[in-house]
Image (cartoon, rainbow, N blue to C red):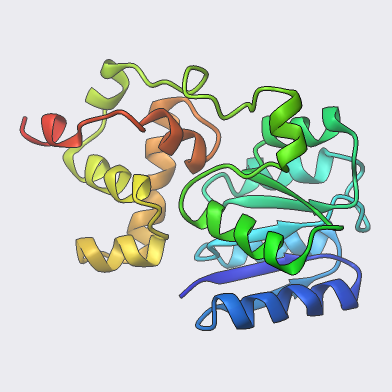
Length: 218
């Protein structure tokens, strides 16, 4: 179903996340790393990863720099930060730096599973108290796409983007369009560049009111 990389230097926490995937997403495959260097190397070598769960405080992270490096090196791979960090400004900064969600390590297993499911559906996840106290960076206005941006996409890219808005992972998109996952990854990279966004969730949020049939008719 999904391929997920758990990047955290605490074995017990990694085991807890593996257990959550085993019960909530039973067909998923999980991989594990314990520092930013091995995480970057793994992500580069495995471009079919559907999600990276990233600890902010594991070795080599240097604050948010590790997240920024990961977002720059692997812009099409969704990253969710899982951390004990509780400063609201830092939590919001993780989204600005390319993460598609933030999960507090103190969250219950049910909350963590719900957050992961939210991200798989193509949405940005933030803790409820953060959303209540400050407007989320995922607001539609901030990521609203202009018609000329969509017009710059090829027909195949539009079809891939339409699938993305349904929350489909690359593997599902490849199956639906009868192409390889590598081809889908290439299309996603081109789509992000043309739309001027840093990750696929921003693209999906910006397309929330788009009638794709109008563009596909041309």
